[in-house]
Image (cartoon, rainbow, N blue to C red):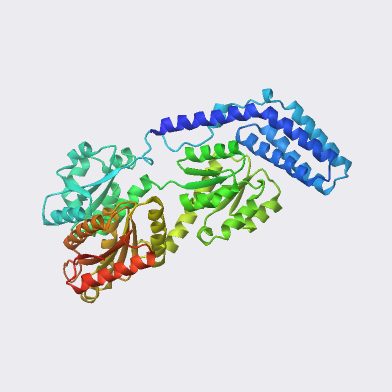
Length: 552
């Protein structure tokens, strides 16, 4: 679905929500007036005061969201007045204040509360115009430009071993014919050979014109300032010297692709007012986010386990379990300690804001909140949590899951496979004679070998597969919905491709291999046993000649 169609569909949804709110408003105002009478004439009824306050709170929040500013102001005043009345139940001034506010409700009939719905909707930032590529699935393709020779042949061959589409481009004049809206084109241009052609085509203009679908890197046999300056002036993203460090080049490709296809933020919205939940979800969806909703706090943990939201937005006041209590419950769960919690409420008392954040909240936004401000806050908090989670869960050298989180993920994926009736395979990989690599070529070169394997695994395996560094030169791969037969073929193809990669060092070029052991579900039903059995199969592969895949 195009971004314009999605935006129109969501705008229509917001219009329907607003119309429904207007239709329900007379009944809700009548109910609130009756509840205020209960507070005035039965001051000892704590349950009645709570219901009145909740009713005013809900109407105030929805009124602000749907553009009824005057109604929102009156209902927030009622909420505040009920709080003060609770402390001064016999005070005539409080009774007079509540009576006056109730009178305001009579004057604010639904017929006089008609916001400009379309104008209100235009305040919501869109996720991108017609030229936006953030929601598209782009296939990366690398073009190697220059005189065909051994260096470029080697670069093409290595790129293909990593699973990328790569081909020659004969001249810059052919470049624009290669560009396609569904592809991200990365051009590797031999800058020395192409210098005369730069005058005929501005690569920097092409980078800008393609709106992120095109980038280029300079490659050269000479590393000097004039060449680097020329590359920068023509819009090059990077400068490499032959032989090209392919994993580093691919990291750059992934960086560019990631900026075009940011992983959407998943937000859980908790509020017992379904109109408010829908309106907040609409705002975030317009910004390209994914939303789950819970109108009952008791649903929250099931949603968090299954959908794994990255941030929770909760109302402050809900029956049975308020926002502060919910945040305490969330923080008691070790798996959810790092998830940001944002309170979204009409509560204006700064002391209550502080109380909420001291009990596990990360931010407090007062309704009505401008859509662009809400979106900015959610993005900032979610991105910070993503960054922290990444550094806690991932190996610093390879960027793969670390040992403990790989084991945790295996347990989670095993439970999922059991629940949905799918197979699962687990592969243990060990680089053959890695100590010899370090001893012969140095530890920095050994690190590059580790990064090469990690990059190849990421590029050639599915996005649904889980890859981790088990420790040292050992890696683990979880292949969900893959039998041992399928996993054996996959890992054997990877083993063959890795053995063809040429690694460069000051002491010469070399190639290495890996061995692999496999185990899985439903053959075994315990995560630890699956890991131990795969490790034993790996040991057999090493003992019987290396460079092979052995099944448990």
